[in-house]
Length: 458
Ligand SMILES: *Cc1c(COP(=O)(O)O)cnc(C)c1O
Image (cartoon, rainbow, N blue to C red):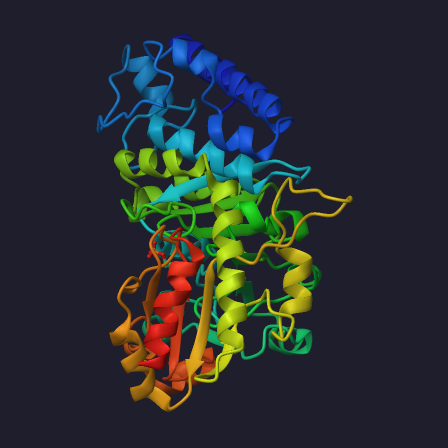
């Protein structure tokens, strides 16, 4: 309905909504001119936001389930999506909005176009919300996915989409081999999906080349950038269309909250879906699929995430440097068969990782400094039992299926995170049963190394 046809009272609120959106856009433009750390610290919540919230210098937590409206016109305008509102927290909430705006700015840092974000209850919810809109059923369809991906992602695609819904999943065995991507795409493909670097195989792929390929076929490229975080890699700058994150992991080191996010650039390609899906994907997800499926993030978790994002760049710098040191020591250890870490020159993905994994705002001699994140994996000589013994002997490093923490954590994916996908699935994902995944935390690197060395020697 054109604005002129609306009742005058409703029109007043539509106008108010436009003014609010213009003010938000102005704040975004102001913040976009700032550096990464400044954006991470303030997001869109500045002096004006504080004065509108009792002067609170920290983003307030809005735990309210719903919004009270001034009158029926206001209610109608909000519920018809004619104006932005916080009508009901399953769909929108001011605290979530602060986090979404910060994430859109951070992932969009250095990118010239518009970006927007939608946060979810978990990383898996984000991946689900980022992919289901493309699976509109208009006959046979397939999705093209790097097999080097998180175990939960594998199960979502293989079991939920593949087995339950009959969607063909075309796994790319070696995501570094562009030909494998080319050969997998056909008229029924809906999207391309890759993870860089991948958990736990630490595989990488050439984002720009795969994005270019996707766009040639009018397909979106979705990238899981959980391990890199925007402090190291911003896939939208290299041509990706949608970025997904487990906010539970490296973005938030404390381990207090589970959360997820999807961040999209404006005007993405897609062979299916309405025009709104293409023009602003994150907003589309928020208004429609997420409204209906309902995997909303809790405002408490949003606040936890915001609080930790403020120091993201410095933390990833420190943790990556420690991980590099640990990877080098492991690579030279007689009881270690192999180490996967994109920072090692011997790693098959090193050249590609070197192009994509750079600490934001770290120019020295005109070059950004490479940082490769804090996850690595290594295979213990002597097979599965030997790997179990090493894991069992760790004293400082925790045994858990988690990563991204300020505390070092190790696990054996074959019996934990990647147990359910079976031997065949693990082979596809490149996960031998003597592989230990280690996420390097904020402890002094010498203490981390000492713990691993005593566990390896036994
Ligand atoms: C953990 C993880 C996810 C899933 O995130 P949750 O918040 O646990 O749902 C997705 N991708 C990667 C790379 C992960 O490590």
